[in-house]
Image 1 (cartoon, rainbow, N blue to C red):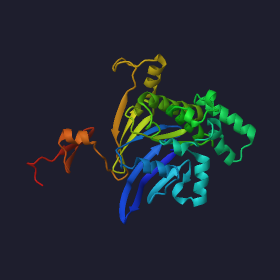
Image 2 (cartoon, one colour; image 1 turned 120 degrees about the vertical axis):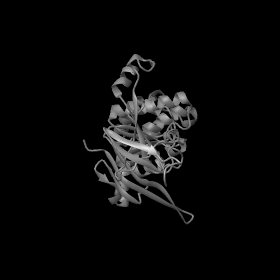
Image 3 (tube, helix red, strand yellow; image 1 turned 90 degrees about the horizontal axis):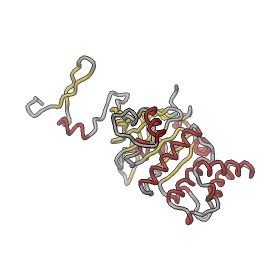
Image 4 (tube, one colour; image 1 turned 135 degrees about the horizontal axis):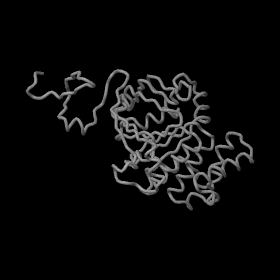
Length: 303
């Protein structure tokens, strides 16, 4: 199966006050069609920059990025505008970027449809389906001041789907709600991902994101560093029982973390493992049966 998103050696350099800031440093990433992916990383790691590139809001400085068969580097400005309008849905952390405060929930959802030229009957039918999907049909006439933070974000998700996108991007969509509401919003992303076959990418600091997505990619210093994959069958079994069991009983999701090796053969060993193994800035590599042994250089070793 061809990846829906394929990034290869992606580089993004910003110029700020005469200085060059490298936000992405040769990032490689592949995302399957319909996958629900979480992206985590420290502030400044490049995760939001990656999201802006995937959404067509920013052009990379070098490398290759393919989304649903489109080479984003080769699109003209007008083609990039068309790509954003037709292919992508955005959900931002700040409500002001998602919604218009003086419009009721339903009019917020229908506004992108009006701009796209949909007729009244089509707008009514699709807005009703979306508001029912996010659980807010009964609040369709409420303005933002009458909705909680979690409800506002649910409306924002409905707005993001108004153009029937194939790609849904969330930039810290749970950043301004409490932990319980955050889990409800992540569960809603998962539900809509399955219901509409959306390829979904969520940038978040939420440590519980692994329980709600198919895969978590960690970005460090502008590169993909590691990924955590869960066994979906075990997750669904646990959800079907409505409880979270203790590990080892065969019903909890099993998570495996992998260190990513990029196209140049580079890998990033997580800081906690480097510290635990006493790894500094140099190691030796030894081929062994079935694997590769990484040995830290000790003070007694020649430099």
